[in-house]
Image (cartoon, rainbow, N blue to C red):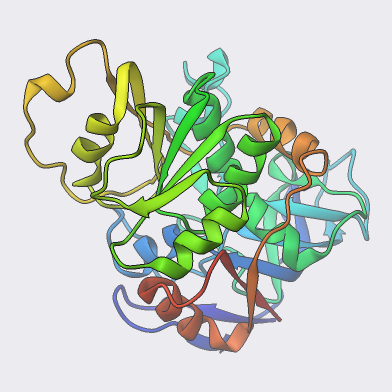
Length: 327
């Protein structure tokens, strides 16, 4: 197999030929057909996440077909199309796993961070954490749903029944979950970098009733806001934009430091919360409604060998929607 490998934190990925991996008990091997490029991959490559495991193959928005089953695997078949997400394994015995909060597992494994991911022609995955996808939809279009979509969905659920919803950072996750929110009948307010009129126009095309800079005040108070951009300075801005009793959901796995802000922004029962990872139930729920909501992903395709260019373009914001690697 071939893979783009992170040998050293902060350095470009290296095109590498490796032996084909063998699935162990309870695992499957998947021939990768598409793998989304997520901002979390940048956090891994740039060393912004703790305890990096290197060398590692990044990538956790994986679409492919099973080509080998490990011992004891049932319910899946050779040739079946599956999706492999960020949460790659949980212990199943800690208090979080036993209380339906496996996203907070004490001994988890994460695809593309603590176990090899999908920037490769093949990947081995825990069979319990592979989502059967059926045959509807194109591989490239489905790939961003495996993290951008799933984390966006969990964030949307945590935002409650907010009718006026602000989305700070209108990239891969926001462009997916905006479509779900509009399908649910919510009003979307999109916040982007100052002067990024192209992304603001993109948000309006997806149904946003308003789009402006992150520093701007929306025309009316929001019921809730989701922050997808990894910028801590957006937390006070979002608190200022939400109504009394409103919530701010921080959706990223990494964020720069949140600056000090006056208590008055938090008062009147406003609240701030974070989203951590996902559960398998999140995947079942979201993938079950994705086609019903008519989600159309905007993707830019890169050959697998050009993963470094895709990461650079993501870092610089050179495309709308999501980037996807194909072998």
